[in-house]
Amino acid sequence: MWWLIPLFLAGFILVHAAKMLRLYLVLMEHKIGFGRFVLLYLKTTLVNLIIPLKLGELYRIFCISRETKHWQVGVLSILVDRFFDTLALCMILLPLDILIFGRLSFITLSFMGIMALIVICYVSILPTFQYLNRYIIRQKSSARAMAALKGLDVVKIWYDFTQNLIRGRFALILLFSFAGWLLEIGTIKLLAAYLTIPFGVGDFTGYIEAIFGIGSSELLKPYTLYGILFMFVFTLIGIAVMFIKSRSKKKA
Image (cartoon, rainbow, N blue to C red):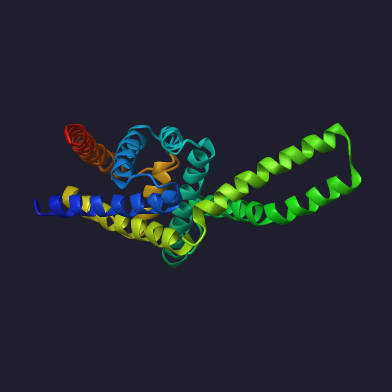
């Protein structure tokens, strides 16, 4: 079964290539050098794998904010990335739950509820802003009204930042999200075969629940440990390549 190891490694690389390209699409307008972006993705993903419950995303927010010089971009790019990641996951979990279990799992219902709330808030922002902005300008002139207008301006700025992150790239970002999850299912299946652990299509829901600590999966720990090992090696390679490139530029 040794031949499953290179297949698993190839699958792992493809999974993170899809996820990395998704985030790159989100940040494309900010013109981060691709080499620097790859290293940013590798080191932040390594931290994310080490710290449980996706809390490593805080480090990614910090790194992106420092790279782009805009902390709003750091926050919103990760929120957008997580949104599309979760949207694609829901598109996979929903038919699996219905066809295999005949009901929606708790994790699927939770994701769908969160996604619905985000979508409702997002589509409501612009018309609400326009209405309140007109109303306050016409009807009020107090200090509170001025503070409310400033607050509305902040909301509009954040809305515009989000628009700039996804404009014209919605379908591509979703496509890479969907590809990432399908590739991850295949990669986990390869690891299960190597470790001789049963893993059917229906077990994927249990794996996702285990990530958030509301279920258990025999594959979560080994998949995470292999991921940390591979990502550590790739990060070291990335640092070495960037160091060699910087040295060669100085010599030139």
